[in-house]
Length: 221
Image 1 (tube, helix red, strand yellow):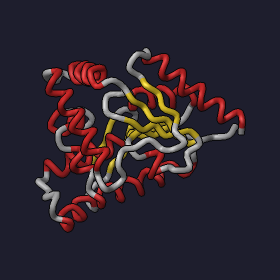
Image 2 (cartoon, rainbow, N blue to C red):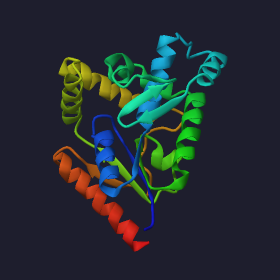
Image 3 (cartoon, rainbow, N blue to C red):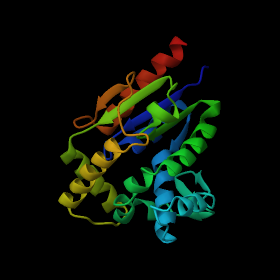
């Protein structure tokens, strides 16, 4: 059966990662969490006090970063940092790190290498526009900011992290602005992407919608 690349882009808190995981599971595809790669890089930069304004320091740091996945675990240089990359500390810094050209070039190269065999689902902010502009299915996910903040608060609470709803909402809107206005690979909807507003969809409904779109393309080919 034909294998395709499915690119899920969109704003934080729209359910991209959880949806992408289930879509991959339903299709028997590999799920690649591109956002976790940027979060892992941010974690490394913060832990090693990398000066984001110093290109040489950034390049040296990137040469020492090895990111991989084991099930739901995010592995940075051999260490499981799955919980560390979901803290507000990372949330508040990941957009700035992601905006650095050298960081994006390094991550995109890794992502494209992973996707060469097709049969993958990858979520992020520039998957359909930069990483896989030839993806057979591109989805752009949106949702009401209040709904997104509530979802993120619940996600953090499940990890034992408790934050005020308004703090989370402000952070999400700040990230939207940074991600959409950055010079390098800004967040935007690909011209041929299908927009899915998840504000009033149940989780299963949004998964089913994307799986249905994917199967239509797979069987048409």
